[in-house]
Length: 272
Image (tube, rainbow, N blue to C red; front, side):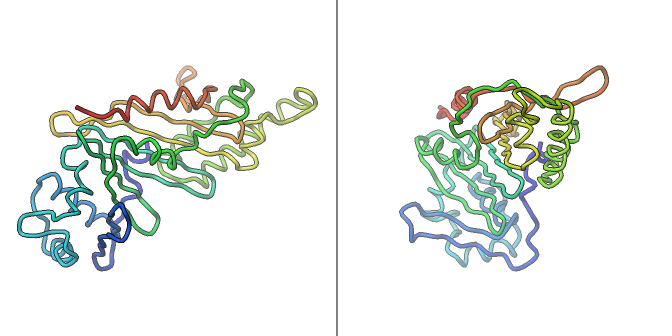
């Protein structure tokens, strides 16, 4: 999903821009795009040097020396250097979105935030990771733990647009799905045409959370697990791909945030 896995990685056409911020208690990098991110990742992992157009600006800001990454860059990238697990998290609404990667190594975590205007990279302790990732989810507590009312299915194009990172098209699909559900119900239960979920779809107050777990196998990242949820202000649903005969569709299964976090907690456990 989401182009496996970085629709956020973009080609920066201007000059390479990288800054090391030490004015905060937790130092971090800010960078303009893909080249800087790939260069820092390669150095942290002991990879080959990049071309001079990339390495020169990195040296200029004091990130690189003849011996490699200099402090505090080495502590920021410690999670990259020995990562055995990687967690990608994204939350998307009709108007906004955030996404990140967390590289989990023994004793260290490196988090990369893929912002609209710039990327940032910081180092974390393992105990800080769950709280840091919470900002990239829509898994807050909700007043209604479970509602089985529909619409509990949507056209497969919903996943196509999610894969392409097109929230405006997702909004159209959900709005159409919600309106069709309300029309089919007529007067509905207790005189209400809309369920909690269909009202959310039509009003555009939904939020989607996507999570992928990757594990390092023979020097390559391999997907090991995934979580996809659709949230209304009151309820939460797991997004599942299903098939009716030869016709694929999307199913929304009611679920609680507690169950999702239990699953994510296994992803975030420190690696030995």
